Length: 261
Ligand code: CAA
Image (tube, rainbow, N blue to C red; front, side, top):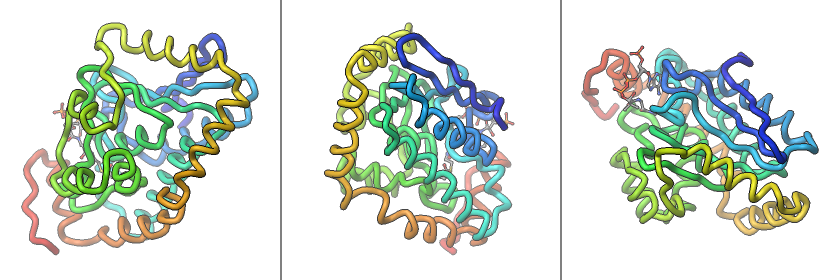
């Protein structure tokens, strides 16, 4: 499990967590999520760490979502456990007393967009692609995506993206306010490291006080109170004909034919 997540310690209190499953576009299976959770728990209490950069391995993807092949055979109770695990990783990223930055190059879909949204902010390269395509698989986002996307871009825009399962590029993500600006593809990770090091030079106690206060402002509209409801709705779709069809169609590399059941 641990070799699915690489930890690179950079200078000046910055660490890079790399999801290392490029052959599956860094899709989040149980092993990846457990590895991320363990590493984040370790880093949360490491006084030498100030800023965590979360990224994927390879050039093609940050994370192409939760692992569809693994989810294909899940029943409701496995799906609920899986969703709870994904939530625990996202809640750690969101609440830990360190700055968390998602460095997105390539695909950040489904659980990939959800992980990125749980970080304090997202830095994205020109070829970044975001989206929550879960309804095309017969399920819904299961790691807090609907709530955090609506918080980031507004409810109407989030509904349009979730119901359509649309993929958006980096330029549109700027227009929507998901990211502040697009960074050049060449030298992307060097620029991310520079920005992380700049933050790491500031007082960590001041930055983490600001983070917890800013998180408190959002408490009522935040994810915490809605976690159980989302886990219930996500898992209730497992075992339905549409969920089976959606995920089998992905594995068979064909378009799903939904019956609405
Ligand atoms: N799960 C499992 N495997 C995945 C995957 C995923 N989410 N995404 C990609 N892969 C695998 C592919 O199956 C393929 O494996 P094989 O070589 O063994 O066939 C490999 O990664 C490379 O992918 P593609 O050949 O499909 O690459 P592409 O360039 O043609 O397409 C893509 C890239 C558009 C990202 C496409 O892979 C894709 O649509 N992936 C799925 C995206 C998605 O639907 N994500 C949401 C998942 S559901 C979710 O995340 C639920 C949740 O909220 C908890």
